[in-house]
Length: 218
Image (cartoon, rainbow, N blue to C red; front, side):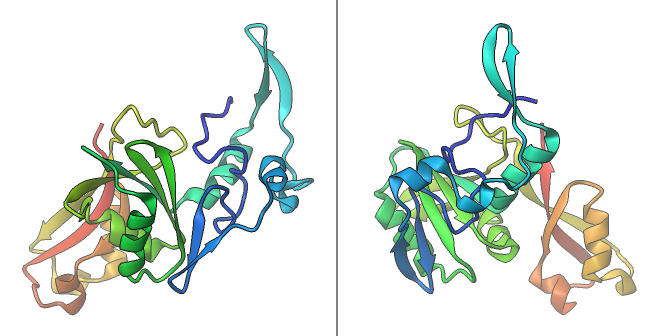
């Protein structure tokens, strides 16, 4: 299959902590990348000879590179915890946005990068932070609304992502089914389970169980 466009440029196969054009935040401190421009263009050393076999071909008379499904899965993997922040009216300075996320005291590292004048890429490093941020759907930063969209390999900044987090309620569940593994299994029927609510975890509301599920509402 032919690859879709890549908002991170030529280093899609890089690890989550080696993203050109981003700053990495480690223990709340900003660390700019030390890679040279040549390194960014050539990609990480570990990617060379790593098993990728991109095939040269022609599509309708135009030279092209073909990617296998397996290669695409490997290339996408470092971006599994990536969201897109969309500013409706105006976008704040990137450093201001980075400061806002730093104040959230996330459990892992994160990177913020510019996709276009209204969209920023938010790359998180673990499932816990991803679920916490995406469950909010939007944030107000200095009175500017930033809506959160799910990034996928086919994300197009000109279109809204149809994948959204939705709280599902299951009333009258028998008490012994108030178990995170059971409810995640039930939630997986509808989409990708993200988290259960605090009341369910504490069993303080046995009348109904709620779970947050990532659902394609197309």
